[in-house]
Amino acid sequence: MATELFRKGDHLCVVFNDLVRGDDGVQANQFLIMHGGRSALIDPGGALLYTPLSLAMTRYVQPRNLDWILASHQDPDIIGSVDRWLMYTSARVVCSRLWGRFIPHSVPHYQKDTGADRYLLLPDEGAEIPIGNMALQAIPAHFLHSVGNFQFYDPISRILFSGDLGASMIDAPYAPITDFTQHVPAMAAFHRRYMASNRACRWWARRARKLDIDMIVPQHGLPIAGHDNVQRFIDWVEGLVCGVDLLPLEEPVFA
Image 1 (cartoon, one colour):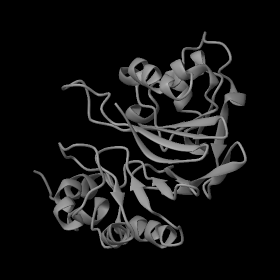
Image 2: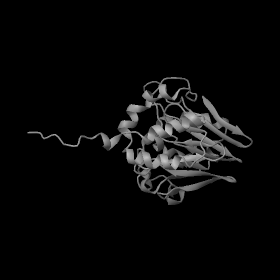
Image 3: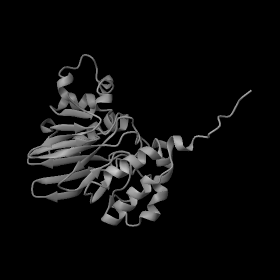
Image 4: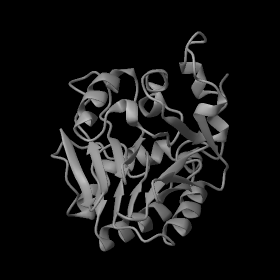
């Protein structure tokens, strides 16, 4: 089932949140952005999701007409199906320059038309991805949790597609959260383990506060909407103790 996050004029943002069924894999959201007849698919997932996603998106765009595949980072639940998207569409793949030589490992060597011209490799400072007469912004979010990690900001809908940052482990209908305090336990364990350090969190928070954000939409779980909830989330990330911060100062000695 597709949920429209934003629609105004010829601009549309859609989430597909229920394509992972049963115990086949971790719940994951996929996102389609359309503007002026152009389109971008964010974090399309692995082979498990290629067929259901390509069918679900035909309500909005035929896969062969897709312009961009945006990958926040290199994980299989993000871009593991890259070989199929390269084969059945003419879309270019956007990812960090750090992963430009790794993601092609998912593509068979005999598959044609999969060379460097099919990739837009992002520098560490980010870039703009044109969609018609507007552009999505690739926002650096390195080490949260990948060493080359990007989020994608849509300046029209004012949605930040945040990848794994903001992910929640929760079984609930897909809708923006209403109580941030009650939502924190659904995020806390994941973030403590998967985010690299508080320094990386603070670095991201300073950048996020410069954006005009109406909604933060992670790749797992529920969106965070409204000025108060968005600001509380940024504050929470800024103070998060996680990753290497939690390693013991003294390594245990084994006989």
